[in-house]
Image (cartoon, rainbow, N blue to C red; front, top):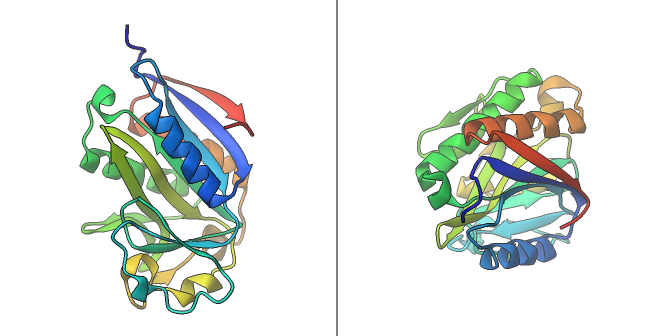
Length: 217
């Protein structure tokens, strides 16, 4: 008997190494059964540049002492670091009866709504996945789907050192400007943002309930 698709497990994991987290996401996805609840992980990574599966290395301009890692998500190059919320979504698309396009649109809609809740006006753009404040990118997306099940997800810049973004072409776009919530509003409350993202993600994908676990994968 299949479990309900209306419940999702939320894991708040604090700061986690990137490569280890990807390994755990892949292991979770590979080990899923029809009775495995979907999961949404909220965390932060130490400084790292990540290249999507088909990303071009030329978009990494000057990494200096920051590690560069290639992974199996979609998209080009991005930066993860302290002060950024990373959200990884492990969703059974078939069970939820949603397409990849609906997944991306749902995440963008959820991020825009969460930003609105903290006083930041933002929008998505056709043909350039992510979320933007005017002409500056504030959130990036990159997913992988295996047998109808997703992993990887999005990153939202909250209150971070934005200088490392100047050493890459963010998401493969030369000259693309990047911003964070602190730059736009002058304040941030990380826990409030977590709550807003949980609320909007569960709303976007019609989860009726969620279970929260902290600091455990």
